[in-house]
Image (cartoon, rainbow over all chains, first blue to last red; front, side):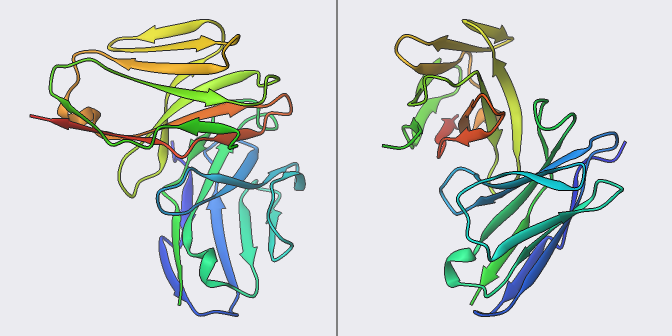
Length: 113
Length: 109
């Protein structure tokens, strides 16, 4: 039973560039949530996708966008990268719209130079 | 004031000792609470859920005090492998999770 998988695991970008991060949820899960975790901080909620729609959104600018596909996998896109976007981006999957236990992927570590 | 606050630590504790740390939350409408464990440069993993007054799982005990709006985590007979950052999480009525910044625990031999 595959857990949550994320790609890429590490990447380096420069300011102004765009990045796409990918997530495949745990088998049987239909809900994907994305979090940003800066060094020494707890995860910050970006948004959640369920039934291919963004259901909830945290306090992040429109530069952060996402998508969920019919197979429940998801992408996180960040445009016009800033130095402050450097962080670990975590994908978490759950069942039933987010009320169940979250299972996290190992994350994608983004460095913006 | 942060919605979920934790003492960042680090807590330096000898192996075999008992350690406890608290987490306070500001949203009185928070429904459920969780403790996650996060190892260095790894993803968070669920340690315990705290749904009512508290619960126990082996060496770990979590307690909830709704009147004072805090939850606690107690670790007995601490092991070297307990060294990690412990994240406190409050779940709101619309299932959004609010995370604390974590408490770093270091168990020393």
